Image (cartoon, rainbow, N blue to C red):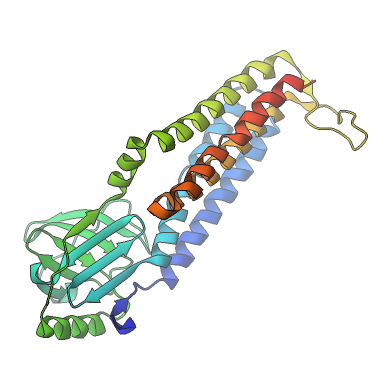
Length: 299
Protein backbone atom coordinates (compact mmCIF):
# COMPACT_ATOMS: atom_id res chain seq x y z
CA UNK A 1 0.00 0.00 0.00
CA UNK A 2 1.28 3.40 -0.97
CA UNK A 3 2.46 5.48 1.98
CA UNK A 4 0.33 8.33 0.60
CA UNK A 5 -2.72 6.40 1.78
CA UNK A 6 -1.56 6.34 5.40
CA UNK A 7 -3.03 9.40 7.09
CA UNK A 8 -2.32 10.75 10.55
CA UNK A 9 -4.33 13.08 12.75
CA UNK A 10 -2.94 16.56 13.51
CA UNK A 11 -0.63 15.96 16.45
CA UNK A 12 1.27 19.10 17.42
CA UNK A 13 -1.45 20.91 19.37
CA UNK A 14 -2.68 17.74 21.06
CA UNK A 15 0.80 16.58 22.08
CA UNK A 16 1.73 20.01 23.46
CA UNK A 17 -1.50 20.16 25.45
CA UNK A 18 -1.28 16.61 26.81
CA UNK A 19 2.42 16.66 27.65
CA UNK A 20 1.93 20.04 29.31
CA UNK A 21 -1.08 18.76 31.25
CA UNK A 22 0.79 15.63 32.37
CA UNK A 23 3.74 17.73 33.58
CA UNK A 24 1.42 20.17 35.35
CA UNK A 25 -0.53 17.45 37.17
CA UNK A 26 2.65 15.55 38.03
CA UNK A 27 4.39 18.69 39.33
CA UNK A 28 1.37 19.79 41.36
CA UNK A 29 0.90 16.29 42.76
CA UNK A 30 4.59 15.97 43.60
CA UNK A 31 4.66 19.38 45.30
CA UNK A 32 1.56 18.55 47.33
CA UNK A 33 3.07 15.23 48.34
CA UNK A 34 6.28 16.99 49.43
CA UNK A 35 4.25 19.44 51.52
CA UNK A 36 2.40 16.51 53.08
CA UNK A 37 5.70 14.91 54.07
CA UNK A 38 6.64 18.10 55.92
CA UNK A 39 3.54 17.93 58.14
CA UNK A 40 2.81 16.06 61.32
CA UNK A 41 0.37 13.17 61.01
CA UNK A 42 -3.12 14.64 61.24
CA UNK A 43 -6.07 15.88 59.21
CA UNK A 44 -3.96 18.42 57.31
CA UNK A 45 -1.44 15.74 56.43
CA UNK A 46 -4.17 13.35 55.25
CA UNK A 47 -5.85 16.12 53.25
CA UNK A 48 -2.63 17.02 51.44
CA UNK A 49 -1.95 13.36 50.74
CA UNK A 50 -5.42 12.88 49.23
CA UNK A 51 -5.02 16.01 47.10
CA UNK A 52 -1.68 14.68 45.88
CA UNK A 53 -3.23 11.35 44.87
CA UNK A 54 -6.10 13.17 43.17
CA UNK A 55 -3.66 15.27 41.12
CA UNK A 56 -1.48 12.30 40.17
CA UNK A 57 -4.37 10.00 39.21
CA UNK A 58 -4.99 11.49 35.71
CA UNK A 59 -1.32 11.37 34.70
CA UNK A 60 -1.28 7.75 33.38
CA UNK A 61 -4.42 8.36 31.29
CA UNK A 62 -3.01 11.57 29.82
CA UNK A 63 0.31 9.89 28.99
CA UNK A 64 -1.50 6.95 27.38
CA UNK A 65 -3.58 9.28 25.23
CA UNK A 66 -0.50 11.28 24.21
CA UNK A 67 1.30 8.09 23.13
CA UNK A 68 -1.82 6.89 21.31
CA UNK A 69 -2.06 10.21 19.45
CA UNK A 70 1.59 9.99 18.40
CA UNK A 71 1.07 6.51 16.91
CA UNK A 72 -2.46 6.96 15.51
CA UNK A 73 -3.09 6.26 11.81
CA UNK A 74 -5.94 6.02 9.32
CA UNK A 75 -4.83 3.62 6.60
CA UNK A 76 -6.76 3.38 3.34
CA UNK A 77 -6.33 0.14 1.43
CA UNK A 78 -8.06 -1.23 -1.61
CA UNK A 79 -9.74 -3.77 0.67
CA UNK A 80 -10.90 -1.24 3.27
CA UNK A 81 -9.97 1.25 5.99
CA UNK A 82 -7.84 0.50 9.05
CA UNK A 83 -8.16 2.79 12.07
CA UNK A 84 -5.46 2.60 14.75
CA UNK A 85 -5.53 4.66 17.96
CA UNK A 86 -3.76 3.20 20.95
CA UNK A 87 -5.56 0.03 21.99
CA UNK A 88 -8.49 0.91 19.74
CA UNK A 89 -8.39 -1.01 16.47
CA UNK A 90 -11.04 -0.99 13.76
CA UNK A 91 -10.87 -2.63 10.32
CA UNK A 92 -13.72 -1.57 8.03
CA UNK A 93 -14.30 -3.43 4.73
CA UNK A 94 -14.59 -1.05 1.80
CA UNK A 95 -17.98 -2.39 0.74
CA UNK A 96 -19.46 -1.58 4.17
CA UNK A 97 -18.61 2.15 3.94
CA UNK A 98 -21.69 4.03 2.77
CA UNK A 99 -20.37 7.60 2.67
CA UNK A 100 -17.64 9.96 3.90
CA UNK A 101 -18.44 13.62 4.57
CA UNK A 102 -16.87 16.58 6.38
CA UNK A 103 -18.72 17.62 9.51
CA UNK A 104 -18.73 21.19 8.17
CA UNK A 105 -21.19 20.14 5.46
CA UNK A 106 -23.73 18.84 7.95
CA UNK A 107 -26.59 21.07 8.97
CA UNK A 108 -26.61 20.18 12.65
CA UNK A 109 -24.45 20.50 15.74
CA UNK A 110 -22.17 17.59 16.61
CA UNK A 111 -21.80 16.81 20.30
CA UNK A 112 -18.41 15.70 21.59
CA UNK A 113 -17.71 12.73 23.87
CA UNK A 114 -17.24 13.28 27.57
CA UNK A 115 -13.73 13.66 28.93
CA UNK A 116 -12.42 14.90 25.57
CA UNK A 117 -9.61 17.42 25.21
CA UNK A 118 -7.27 18.62 22.43
CA UNK A 119 -5.58 15.60 20.91
CA UNK A 120 -8.07 13.12 22.37
CA UNK A 121 -11.62 13.24 21.05
CA UNK A 122 -12.36 9.64 21.95
CA UNK A 123 -15.54 7.85 22.87
CA UNK A 124 -19.18 8.05 21.90
CA UNK A 125 -21.66 10.87 21.43
CA UNK A 126 -25.24 10.73 20.22
CA UNK A 127 -27.14 13.08 17.96
CA UNK A 128 -30.73 12.78 16.84
CA UNK A 129 -29.99 12.77 13.11
CA UNK A 130 -27.33 10.01 13.04
CA UNK A 131 -27.62 8.23 16.37
CA UNK A 132 -24.45 7.13 18.15
CA UNK A 133 -21.11 8.33 16.71
CA UNK A 134 -17.74 6.94 17.78
CA UNK A 135 -14.96 9.51 17.82
CA UNK A 136 -11.43 8.43 16.96
CA UNK A 137 -10.10 11.92 16.39
CA UNK A 138 -7.74 14.64 17.59
CA UNK A 139 -9.60 17.90 16.95
CA UNK A 140 -12.82 19.37 15.59
CA UNK A 141 -11.31 21.35 12.71
CA UNK A 142 -10.60 18.34 10.48
CA UNK A 143 -13.50 16.08 11.39
CA UNK A 144 -14.84 13.65 8.81
CA UNK A 145 -17.79 11.35 9.34
CA UNK A 146 -17.59 7.81 7.98
CA UNK A 147 -20.93 6.03 7.84
CA UNK A 148 -20.87 2.24 7.67
CA UNK A 149 -23.66 -0.29 7.60
CA UNK A 150 -23.48 -0.66 11.38
CA UNK A 151 -22.27 2.65 12.84
CA UNK A 152 -20.79 6.10 12.21
CA UNK A 153 -17.18 7.05 12.96
CA UNK A 154 -15.68 10.53 13.36
CA UNK A 155 -12.02 10.79 12.37
CA UNK A 156 -9.68 13.76 11.88
CA UNK A 157 -6.97 13.28 9.25
CA UNK A 158 -4.59 16.24 9.12
CA UNK A 159 -5.55 16.77 5.46
CA UNK A 160 -9.23 15.81 5.14
CA UNK A 161 -9.48 16.84 1.48
CA UNK A 162 -6.58 14.59 0.53
CA UNK A 163 -8.16 11.75 2.51
CA UNK A 164 -11.46 12.15 0.67
CA UNK A 165 -9.72 12.18 -2.72
CA UNK A 166 -7.81 9.02 -1.79
CA UNK A 167 -11.03 7.40 -0.62
CA UNK A 168 -12.74 8.32 -3.90
CA UNK A 169 -9.89 6.75 -5.91
CA UNK A 170 -9.98 3.62 -3.76
CA UNK A 171 -13.75 3.33 -4.16
CA UNK A 172 -13.48 3.66 -7.94
CA UNK A 173 -10.89 0.88 -8.12
CA UNK A 174 -13.15 -1.40 -6.11
CA UNK A 175 -12.20 -4.15 -3.70
CA UNK A 176 -10.91 -7.48 -4.99
CA UNK A 177 -11.02 -9.22 -1.62
CA UNK A 178 -12.73 -7.19 1.12
CA UNK A 179 -10.87 -7.29 4.42
CA UNK A 180 -12.50 -9.03 7.34
CA UNK A 181 -14.27 -6.68 9.70
CA UNK A 182 -12.40 -6.46 13.00
CA UNK A 183 -12.87 -4.40 16.13
CA UNK A 184 -10.75 -4.27 19.29
CA UNK A 185 -11.61 -2.09 22.27
CA UNK A 186 -9.46 -1.26 25.33
CA UNK A 187 -12.07 -3.02 27.49
CA UNK A 188 -11.62 -6.20 25.44
CA UNK A 189 -7.85 -5.93 25.92
CA UNK A 190 -8.36 -5.79 29.69
CA UNK A 191 -10.64 -8.84 29.55
CA UNK A 192 -8.00 -10.78 27.60
CA UNK A 193 -5.40 -9.96 30.23
CA UNK A 194 -7.73 -11.06 33.01
CA UNK A 195 -8.32 -14.38 31.27
CA UNK A 196 -4.56 -14.98 31.07
CA UNK A 197 -3.65 -16.72 34.32
CA UNK A 198 0.02 -15.71 34.22
CA UNK A 199 -0.63 -12.03 33.53
CA UNK A 200 -3.45 -11.88 36.07
CA UNK A 201 -1.30 -13.57 38.70
CA UNK A 202 1.65 -11.22 38.22
CA UNK A 203 -0.53 -8.11 38.35
CA UNK A 204 -2.49 -9.26 41.40
CA UNK A 205 0.76 -10.28 43.11
CA UNK A 206 2.22 -6.81 42.61
CA UNK A 207 -0.94 -5.15 43.92
CA UNK A 208 -1.09 -7.42 46.99
CA UNK A 209 2.56 -6.72 47.83
CA UNK A 210 1.96 -3.00 47.37
CA UNK A 211 -1.06 -3.17 49.68
CA UNK A 212 0.96 -5.05 52.30
CA UNK A 213 3.69 -2.41 52.05
CA UNK A 214 1.12 0.35 52.63
CA UNK A 215 -0.35 -1.47 55.63
CA UNK A 216 3.09 -2.21 57.08
CA UNK A 217 4.15 1.42 56.69
CA UNK A 218 0.98 2.70 58.36
CA UNK A 219 1.49 0.31 61.27
CA UNK A 220 5.14 1.31 61.80
CA UNK A 221 4.71 5.11 61.66
CA UNK A 222 2.82 5.50 64.99
CA UNK A 223 5.36 3.33 66.83
CA UNK A 224 8.36 5.53 66.05
CA UNK A 225 8.85 9.27 66.18
CA UNK A 226 11.95 9.09 64.00
CA UNK A 227 13.50 6.46 61.77
CA UNK A 228 16.66 5.99 59.77
CA UNK A 229 15.90 5.10 56.18
CA UNK A 230 19.36 4.65 54.75
CA UNK A 231 22.99 3.77 55.39
CA UNK A 232 26.22 5.70 55.18
CA UNK A 233 29.17 4.39 53.10
CA UNK A 234 30.62 2.96 56.33
CA UNK A 235 27.49 0.88 56.85
CA UNK A 236 26.10 2.97 59.71
CA UNK A 237 22.47 4.17 59.69
CA UNK A 238 21.91 7.70 58.42
CA UNK A 239 20.60 10.49 60.64
CA UNK A 240 17.02 9.78 61.73
CA UNK A 241 14.14 11.67 60.13
CA UNK A 242 10.43 11.97 60.86
CA UNK A 243 8.70 8.60 60.57
CA UNK A 244 6.17 10.12 58.15
CA UNK A 245 8.91 9.96 55.54
CA UNK A 246 8.28 6.21 55.40
CA UNK A 247 5.30 7.00 53.19
CA UNK A 248 7.86 7.53 50.46
CA UNK A 249 8.29 3.76 50.33
CA UNK A 250 4.78 2.83 49.10
CA UNK A 251 4.77 5.91 46.88
CA UNK A 252 7.99 4.90 45.13
CA UNK A 253 6.83 1.29 44.99
CA UNK A 254 3.53 2.35 43.42
CA UNK A 255 5.35 4.35 40.76
CA UNK A 256 7.66 1.41 40.01
CA UNK A 257 4.75 -1.04 39.82
CA UNK A 258 2.79 1.27 37.54
CA UNK A 259 5.75 1.91 35.23
CA UNK A 260 6.77 -1.74 34.91
CA UNK A 261 3.17 -2.92 34.48
CA UNK A 262 2.48 -0.31 31.82
CA UNK A 263 5.51 -1.38 29.78
CA UNK A 264 4.60 -5.03 30.26
CA UNK A 265 1.07 -4.42 28.96
CA UNK A 266 2.52 -2.56 25.98
CA UNK A 267 4.47 -5.67 24.97
CA UNK A 268 1.56 -7.95 25.84
CA UNK A 269 -0.38 -6.71 22.81
CA UNK A 270 1.82 -8.78 20.49
CA UNK A 271 1.84 -12.57 20.82
CA UNK A 272 5.50 -12.84 19.82
CA UNK A 273 6.44 -10.49 22.69
CA UNK A 274 4.44 -12.22 25.43
CA UNK A 275 7.51 -13.64 27.17
CA UNK A 276 9.00 -10.15 27.54
CA UNK A 277 5.62 -8.95 28.81
CA UNK A 278 5.49 -11.70 31.44
CA UNK A 279 9.01 -10.86 32.63
CA UNK A 280 8.14 -7.18 33.00
CA UNK A 281 4.87 -7.93 34.78
CA UNK A 282 6.69 -10.29 37.14
CA UNK A 283 9.44 -7.71 37.74
CA UNK A 284 6.81 -5.19 38.84
CA UNK A 285 6.53 -7.03 42.17
CA UNK A 286 10.27 -6.75 42.89
CA UNK A 287 10.25 -3.20 44.29
CA UNK A 288 7.33 -3.60 46.73
CA UNK A 289 8.73 -6.97 47.85
CA UNK A 290 12.19 -5.56 48.60
CA UNK A 291 10.77 -2.49 50.34
CA UNK A 292 8.45 -4.69 52.38
CA UNK A 293 11.46 -6.72 53.53
CA UNK A 294 13.32 -3.48 54.31
CA UNK A 295 10.66 -2.53 56.88
CA UNK A 296 12.09 -5.29 59.08
CA UNK A 297 15.45 -3.49 59.30
CA UNK A 298 14.14 0.02 59.97
CA UNK A 299 15.56 1.48 63.16
